[in-house]
Length: 141
Image (cartoon, rainbow, N blue to C red):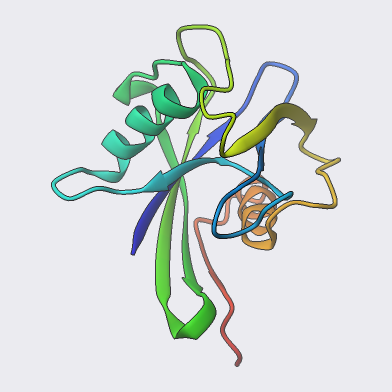
């Protein structure tokens, strides 16, 4: 399965995270915005769509910078890959558009992420700060 994630940063070097609820995975944990890449859609297009659907903001393609690719093994050996794009510029006012899936949205300092964050998302955020563009999660050496 292909996913696209959004690392949304503000001028205070804070990342926007969503607290998940009523989902099939990661309830009560924080995550970046994003979701599945649909058929005939690029990862960049998926981020633009998801940002509007989840957060009520419009991001132009030229304001998205690819920053990381995560290759992850999930439950039942299902393999996922997630392309993460960073944006520091967008239009519109942030608003939780999916309260049935997200109980809140909050800004967090990059060096003070919440304890209840999805492990893979924390890994991505930390590696992006080190300019590391690829990682794996869930595999045993």
